[in-house]
Image (cartoon, rainbow, N blue to C red; front, side, top):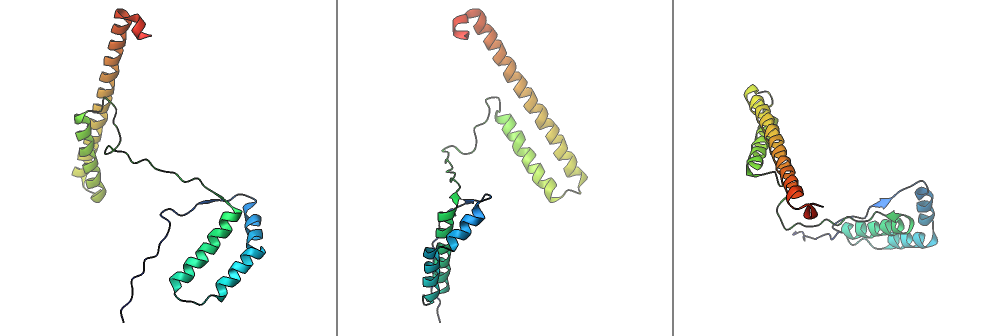
Length: 161
């Protein structure tokens, strides 16, 4: 016998409900309400065509009760960025990026083989160099920015303020 492949349709993000001190009693009162009891009785009297159908109906019953008794958490909609990755600081140049990639590769190697001294030494040397490079680039950028502001203050004070 061939089994039919059925596709269960679900919401991409399930609802999230907020529980507080009163939620339990409110939920119980909604479950004990006449409407919910009649829905449950109808569910019990339905002929079982398939387990998926029964699970879907029972899940919908529980979700309806939860919607009536609980508050839902607001859904977070994520923005899809058009650029790949996050925007780096203006002082974070190609040299910093390549040093960071090298550090990540060494971190992965260290994670795979933490007992090798050579790998540990390479990683910590790269980490020290990366931190030193970042510190230098930040200081250089801030120094250049300070010089530009001082020149702007001397040459064109109105534009400075």
